[in-house]
Length: 221
Image (tube, rainbow, N blue to C red; front, side, top):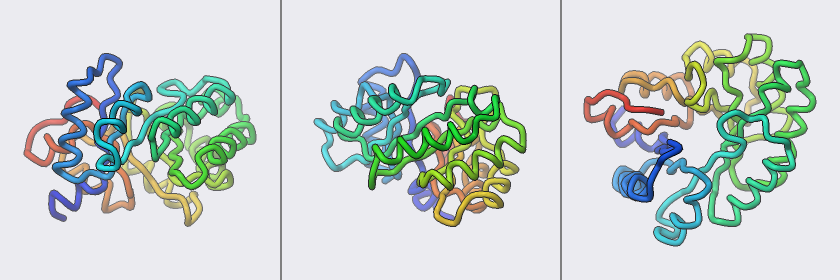
């Protein structure tokens, strides 16, 4: 697989709390140069990116990030504003507390509600695998599928662990055929990047893809 082929799977990411406009410009310029799938950015930068780059950049953003325990009504407003500002893709964090309490139907309903807000725009659902048991991961595969989301995503990159190939294999076994997979937070080498793609991930969330493919180490998310 060529570098360009791998980069076409990447959501080029900058989600640090202290990200500056200079950081965002660098991200966007790299995304255009290397033709990544999108840039994944904080909601506060969506409109400025859209006003600056227009349709040259596919904008992804995060909702309920990174802890997931905002109430559904707040996530709805976040998503509505993000889409209004110019985002095409939403990565939402599930309410992990609800998952741990076994309230899987409630989580499913929240995902369904957010998908209704997104409409034809892409909704990716972050389940934060590092906090979940295998049973809970399976339940989330079913919830994401039943709710009609477009992607299941492993991690925020801000938890205690990131994506693993074992989790991707588990997803493949339990998600519906229409659900795609995104790995994030565990891509440390160029080989990792290629292995996640080969295992079936259609998106990879990382801030380090350009570095990785230049033989450098991963930095951050």
